[in-house]
Length: 202
Image (tube, rainbow, N blue to C red):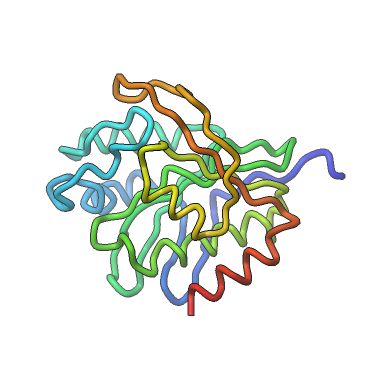
């Protein structure tokens, strides 16, 4: 077994018929990403289940959030462009990256209201998962979410993740205890998981 795996690229473009995924850039993407994230546009708080992320009520709050995310040494933030909607609709990160163990998490996923429950997330996750297992050749891909976030837990199962357990009182978020549900896919499962996921794209 190798001693270390490569770090995800900060200069990459992943594309299929539904989406284009590239690394987020603060100078270029701040305003379109804020437009996708704002409460004013979505009429809901897209970040209510994220760890200590405030509601996006103005662009300054979003700038602080995105700046902090882009500075994380063990995270790469990708923006997701929908070809059908012809606009940036959200973000997803490869995070908690441990190259010495070949382990990585896909997280901090959010989409504008009109992009939710469409082809966009499945298409984007298919590209990111393929990149993790086939290009980076990682051993383990993780998915973690607030146990109150039923939509995220259902998405994890639909995308092929296996439930590993509940980390009780894992963190404090917005002044409350958060229990975190953990899921994973490992490299030996990917071939079958990819086939099942491919069927959802057709």
